[in-house]
Amino acid sequence: MEIKEFLNKNKDKMIDDLTRLVAHNSIYSEDEKPFGKANRAVLDEALKLMSDSGLKTNNLDYYCGYGEAGEGDKVIGILAHLDIVPAGEGWKSDPFTLLNKDDVLYGRGVSDDKGAVIASLYALKYLIEEKYPFKKRVRLITGCNEESGSKCIEHYVEKEGQIDMGFTPDGNFPGIFAEKGMIGGIIVSNNSKIINIKGGDASNIVPKKVNVEVPINSYDESTLNEFFRDHDIEYNIIKSDESIRLTVFGKSAHASLPDEGINAIAYLMEGLYRAEFNDELVAYFHDKIALCTHGEKLGLDVLKDEYTDFTMNVGLIRKEGEKIIITLDNRFPVTRKIEDVKPRLLETLNLGNNHFEVTSSVEPLFFSLDDPMIKALKAAYEKVSGDDSPMMAIGGGTYAKAMPNCIAFGCEFNGEENHIHDANECLKVSSLLKQVEIYVEAIKNLNEEL
Image (tube, rainbow, N blue to C red; front, side):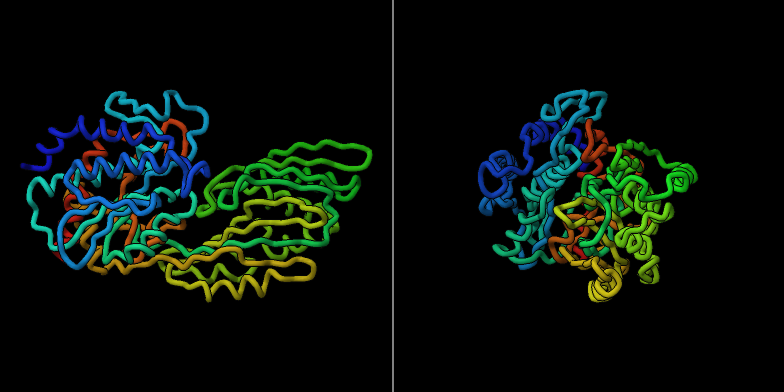
């Protein structure tokens, strides 16, 4: 049977199966180990769908599970996830009741990543029904903790070992061959005249708002007002007899793309410096960070390579007791290593009463564009789509970093807006079907060419 005939025959069943997965509000929860009752239930649902499609299934302690087809010594892995982010507000329909409106599917997880689970499953179902001669085992691995730490894949590796090759349908087409490394950290200041301060929503988001309280008459008001006006920064000021309260507004963006946002914290601190607010932390911030987003003040911008550059995002700031704590999200080029960056951060950011400590670090993911696995996946995408766009290097991170020998490959098509992590998350039915076609070719290529 030709793939398009198979898809036409199974389209309604695919949507029904996706409906079953979307019905589970599978956010992280501590109501039952390891990741909550809803994640246990959705994994049971997914494993039943796999079993009904002819795959041999295994539940790995409700961290994740997999369905397997084929035989052989090597394992092709397809890493998808069943957990979701909270639905949030602003939906025009019930986020857990799949809505098909004009051949567009709406519901939390349809694009991230439950739709990809169904697309991958039906790619394997097609190959099984066609009695495709597998030379390797192919495992559809469905995790339950991608959105909050990827402990699911860590558990898989502990139990089953690494895959030999594969992809995660949790990124973009035509594929992501490289992902920046990351170093997270905090600056702790023990000497500031700032009375109180709080800003930002998360370390990996450019902050859109910050509130600060400083002593009355502690800076030149006209200079600060002029600075904000010159940079088109929205702000509010409330005065009392003893202090001034400032609210500065910016624009949110992902920390991997800080130039797309307006960092409220950075503009506040730089504005105070320009307005002669005599403060050790404010002076330190100006000397080390200021309005820079590529580590220019620290000399880290020179680390850029032919694919990516260095970025720094000041994500959060808060006062705890007498200390002020600032979070930094640092992302470094794909051909560099942690050892190229971490010593420089520690050397330049530790000064006086301001101390920097690293809280997390992840090496980059990088595959040569000539790597056989990369070429096999790109060929699959090109065959189905007719698009020869180059694979991408990104500043964000995907499931692929949790598993060696893996890259992100789909499921989102360039130019489509699926509202991932947003209200009214959606997926075109035509895109779901095209995913299946691409993954069929990808599995074939990985089976035959490597």
